[in-house]
Amino acid sequence: MRGQLFQHLRRKDLIQNRVNIDDWEIYLVIGNDRSGALVTIIERKISFTVSMRVDDKSERLVTATTIALL
Image 1 (tube, one colour):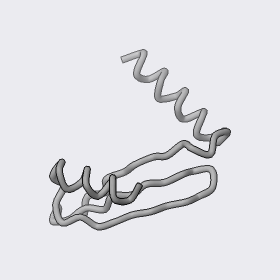
Image 2 (spheres, helix red, strand yellow):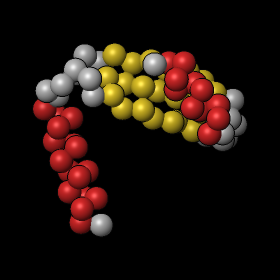
Image 3 (cartoon, helix red, strand yellow):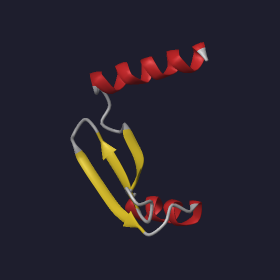
Image 4 (cartoon, one colour):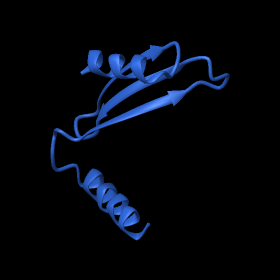
């Protein structure tokens, strides 16, 4: 647990500094009724965001959507 917390805090510090332009974050946002989701890919330094709605959160669909967005 301590190692994970340290890595999280270190990652958070790196994100805040925004030194690299190639630091991407990928999120899967689940809807209220759990019928759909939103795959979001964000590059924090230049505030570039792409997203796409998916009908379900299956691994196969989310992976395919992520690859299509990249």
